[in-house]
Image (tube, rainbow, N blue to C red; front, side, top):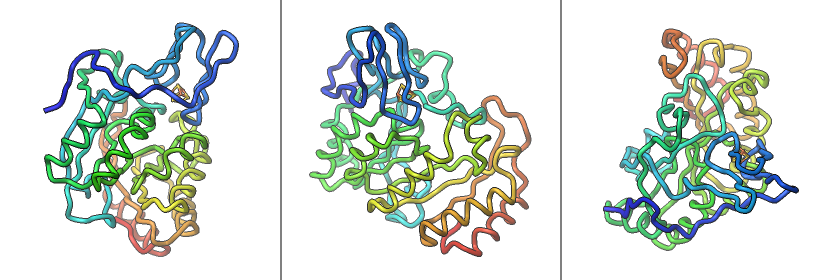
Length: 290
Ligand code: SF4
């Protein structure tokens, strides 16, 4: 179906980085890792050997499937359609309740079986399935940004839309380059407490800024808030989140989803009654809450 060969050549090369003396500075996401020679960045997929900045995981995918678009979740964009979905490995955050930890937070990224899909093969595969959209999902798609930029023109030429299911932690420069090529996105807003966001390895301000840029830049944006005990179950914080979304646009859909124990979290699942309360709060200000 696709090449899947170890070492298959992909033209994609890392960008958004610069040399700084003996080290390299990555500029793909909000972290801006300074990587010493022989080291890797926080995400583990980008590294610097002292001569070459590398991302051996570009164009290599751990998971490939065809999903209902509602599973992304997107409810107000091409409803009822199916979407070609693929994900790689690694993440630039460290949520201890990650439901996709086996690919996003494995002990060793190199242990995850990966298949190479060139941008040309991707366009062929999607056309072969008679689909008209592709989602970069399952792990954080920011880490495939160079690949997405290489594939997007081919996909657009074939009438195939590009969707990101993301934590929204792009650097400003990377988002500037990606924006023209992204048709729709679901952004995962983990919590509205900045300190708790930082404890998960993210940044509330970054996700707010990038969500606003996408929404104002013509991307169809939907948001997800996973209601996790002790992380994002505060009524006060959720009310602030809803207020922020309403100020961006009351037409932005908000998905309120239920936490289940996963990875390092064993706390019982979120009480369904709390989700109903959250939905009632969302309904006071937003046109679409699910
Ligand atoms: S993508 Fe982010 S986490 Fe990964 S090396 Fe670059 S700045 Fe660091």
